[in-house]
Every structure is written in structure tokens, then in C-alpha cells.
Image (tube, rainbow over all chains, first blue to last red):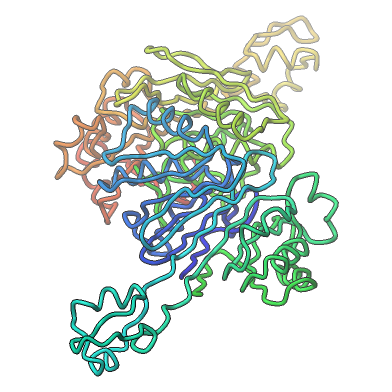
Length: 301
Length: 301
């Protein structure tokens, strides 16, 4: 699982910081999460091929989370994309994009498929044989979702030497991988765990931005490997958090602890601060394993 | 007159080139012309104060000319702007901006005043005591205008020594500057040209992008000091120009010659080319004084 931080600052793009956008590579999927202004340029800088992105997830319709989307959609047409593109976003985004297309006498050569969200409870919004994506309802000034990306339990791994030694026909390998006991060529029942080992633990990632402190999300993100939780403010401006429906670094730490996550990744920093290390220190009051997101950083988990 | 090229390439933003946007500083006005994605970051890079921009002119509603606008408008709010902002743009832009504001539960603290354009003939769209701005109807795939910025004729300059020598009362200086003859303290008529000199020649700038070759614009831009004319293509791709309603460098040179402009500035280059110098060479077949626009360049005329 690889996470590319294209941008992780709140509010306005600047010469040296970008608004929210990140790319999660998980099980051969390349998921784009949020798409602030400048995202397409950051994708180029990270050498991420536009064509590999088949799903885009937009948390909410504040500009610093989606103003780069219509440009990316247009660029994909210019690059002669033919692959379907799915956009999972709050209701209203389709209207914004289609209005701009119409005014430009433009179109896409590929299928642009909007999945508009309006549920207030967590729902499964994407699933294939290996991965599933759920919404995480958040508490912000407009309708907002975080997203939970979960690998499914993989197949058991064959211990080839043991399998051959047990004289099992190749035809049964599939069933072994699925966890079944099988009969060998001598008619003897072979217990699955004697010839296979457990699959790798499935990875999971939760993206939670933007949101006020919200304990309701804890059951949804319980035990995830990595939690990206917004931390717009430091303690000195904690009074601004509930008013603007953002969180402090300390609150992000508290959520991480309650949810028993593996790693807490902080981001969505207010641009008023110069030293990110203070975010880490304050989050650590509640939770030990804290990392700082920053533009251009790539995390492998 | 100072022209800041924030971006001058066609189509998609890249890590090293920006879509169209430029800032014209003329007679204390700071006019923003077009606003492709990334413009607000380029304004910061050029250290142009957002608050000094009171008028934005948008040529047409293709993304590479306006996808940065809604972000800039939002940023101006975050920067607590209070100054009125006038946007001169094709009909439709107001709907795009207000829809995005509505979805974000957002607003502006300053007056955002749209002047929607739909005339097919040149019209005066801004005027004060020193400057006027006219549209230049262009021929592109959607409704498009170029813009002609013209200083007005200034006041005549007093030759203070001559004025005092002629024994003219201070109360008449205003009339002298306006070009009138006046009576001196001895009741004698003083010819204006004996005590004043001509004002500086008013400067003018024409922005023409995007457009197919269009001789109709020649009378409108006749004798301008500087003409920015799009040159999307080189001769090797001249066949693409009429189809996409763009121009070649050579055609830009021809328009410059017919209009007898001072300097021709080329731009809106297709991103397929690596060497801009060929644009200059080809334009020079028709017109001698050619300059190449490029991102980050600043021209003083």
C-alpha cells in the first residue's frame, strides 16, 4: 500500500504548498482522493499515469478539495483517454462539471460516471474481488465523507513442498487456496493448515478530512493500518476548531487512540503555521505512532 | 505599460508550463487577462497583490482560460478582500461561479460584479479618465473576445519657465493643460503651443487569443503598440489551424503587419513543440518586430 501526498494544506494553494489531494495505490488500484487546484500538475510531478486512475473520491465541495477536478477531466480527454472514469462525490458535482463542459462546447471521449453521495450513514461505494471502499460520514460545514479503503482477506498460500509431499493433485490447489481440506491421490484427507499458510494481513487506510472532532467515526475506522486525520489547528487555536468544524492535532491523536489504528498521519494544516513538528508533538499526547504528511511525501505501508 | 506573462501555453497545465493568464499594468490599473488553472499561484510568484486587481477579463470559456478563476475568487475572500471585483466574461461564467459558491455554502465579502458579454461587434466595456477597454470579437470554437486596452490622450505638459515668462496666472494652468489658448495678466492672448508641449503618446495593448486567422480585427487593433496574438501552430501543422480555429505564427505575423503594430508578441503555443524560436522565425516572414511570450517573462513597453 503506497500513499502519495500531492497536497495536504488547507485553504489556498501557494507557491510552496498545495490543497488536498492524494493518491492511494492499493492492490493494483490507483485511487485519487480529493482534487484541489493544481492536482493534475502534481500527478505529473509524481509520474502517476492519469490513465491508471479509474476512481476519484471527493470528500466535499469546498474548493480546496475539488477545484482541480474539472481541469483534470478535460486534460484526460486531451490525452485521448478511453477508460471509464468513476467519480464518487457529494451530490452537486455532476452539475458543476457538466455545466462547464456545456459552456465550453466540450465532452469526454471516455465514460464519465458520477456516483453522487448523500447518505448520512457509512455505505459501501466500491467493491471488487480484492478491495472495498466505504464512506465515513464526517462533521463539517457542508456534507462531507471520509473514505475507508480495505483490502479483502487474500487466499491462503500453498507450501509447494508440503503439497507435493502430501501427493495432492494439481486440480485441488484452487480449493486449498480457498481454505478447504482435500483428498490426496491415495484417498487420504489432508488438513488444509498442514500444507498452506495464512495470507498476508489485509491492509486498510482511512482518509478523514475535513471534520470536527467526531467519535462516531471510531467504530468505522477501528484497527485500520493507517488513519489520515485532518489537524487544521494547534492547541493555541483550539477555540477555532468547533466553530469552523475542523480538528486539532490533539483531537486527531485522540481519535487514533480510540480507534486503535496502526499509524496516524496528520494533514490539512492551516497555512498560518510554519513548524509542522508542533502538530506531531501535540498529537503524541494521545497517540504514539504519528507521522506528518507533507506535499511530495510518499508513504509505503 | 508592463505585461506579466503568468502563462502562455495552450491546453493543459504541466510542471513547467501554465495555461493562459497575464497581468497588464497600465496607468495604475492592474488588469488580469484570462485565468487558467494555477493563476493564483503565479500571481503570488510574480508578487502581484491580489487586492490591486479590480478587473478580470476572460476571453472565452475553454478551461485553459478560466479554470483558475473560481479558486482565485475564493482565495480573495479568505484574504478578507473588501474591494469590488469586476469580471468581464462571456455569458455563462456567472452561473458557473455562483453554482460552485452555492454548493460550498460560500460567499464573497466583497462585491463580485459580473459583466457578461455576448455582443458580436466590438464594444467599450470599461472606461475611466485615463484608460478604456474594448472587446475584439474573435473567431474560435466558442464565443470569444480579445481585449484592446488603450490609454487616453494625456494632458499637455506645461513649460513652466515659458508660462511664467508669459506672465500667465496660475488659475489658467488647468486650461493650458487641456490645450486652450489663454489671456495673460497683461490681457494678451497666449498661444497654447508656445508654453506647452505634447503629452506622451498614449500606450495601447491588444490581447487576441484564441482565434483563427481573422482580418476583420485589423481595423480594431490598428497601430497598437503591442499585439499579443495567439500562434498555436507552426507551418508544419498549418492544416490544423482552421479546423481547431487557431492561428499559425505566420498568420499572426500577417495580422501584425496589416495592423501596423509596434511589437508582435507570440503565445498560446501548442505543447507539442520544444523550440519556441521557430515561431519567431515563421512570424518574421511577414513582420519584423516579433517577441516570444513565455511563462514568467515581464515586458515593459
